Image: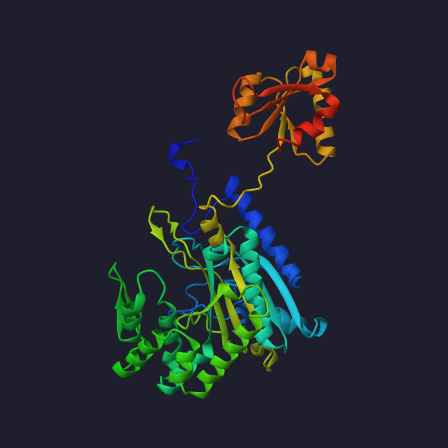
Length: 464
């Protein structure tokens, strides 16, 4: 082939291949998360990657002039279709379509890829795996939201995190909405205000960054300008003062708006239910979180890791939320015409993977196979008898797939694959009905043992 016609083996920005230990750990995370979703009573759901664009809406949008800019959208005959950017909007469509067949209180979980056409950064991709757990129906939402907190706490501990390595931050959108109403901020500016507040804890923002976004504009370090909400100085000051409040008691004393008071009361009720279990120490109030997605209406949460990670440029940074969610009162009513309340959480599995793979404390359960080496072609039938015996006893095993490589080359490949053990059998072993086991991680010169064939399974289980 002409060199000029060779393809470049690379990926677009924001997409990632995963293999080896990283993929094994990812599957391990999925297994734990799914186990706990089922443990908490949810049923599985799978929806297609594409939805009609109008059905999923533009709740992600920050660009008012181009509300679908963060969504992959395409023409499809007479309709527009989009790759789903989260799992909540497809859930709303599904529930509206099939609600007559579903229980009145519907708990579902979904673990699927979603797509966002946004700038990639630390643990943020344009295609990534989410694990969602939702509860839809007329329930006691103090109980439902407390269950979400319990589910997050138990799952992260089961994954292998210590309790001091993560915090579940909770708030209620009604609190800030009441303040916005009191400040008489116009409808067209409200979502921009909420998204500005939501960026307080994001890298490079802080109070000054939020203040700029609440005012006319914000210019970041690169010189890029983001249009602000253009509030008055008085409105900005009162919002910044709100962001400095630390507990429910202080909020109750300072925010007299009935909607804010309602949100405070709902949050108190959630904490009461959480106190009945063993996870209350993991949950803290944080009134600066408001969640950028437009469909959240009341309870909201974000789960943050209490340790820094190393980004792709070698810098130590805060990763951001690895599990977030909240309540949505109007998401399903777009289809049904009546309010059907729901609440739920979403684990960012690929973002969580980005963090935990950097920790030494999580054991990767990588079940590498036993390699049965091929010494001579005439014994190939015997090697397959050995590998069948291992597989029949639930031990991963394979026969080396060549009869032309010497033993040294076979062991070199085994070491490159980081296998733990190899089986080496030649004329002497088959004559004596024995098997030689080579511990590939043992001390050189002391890592071979020859055993009776009858002891093979017991001996191999010491290595795998």
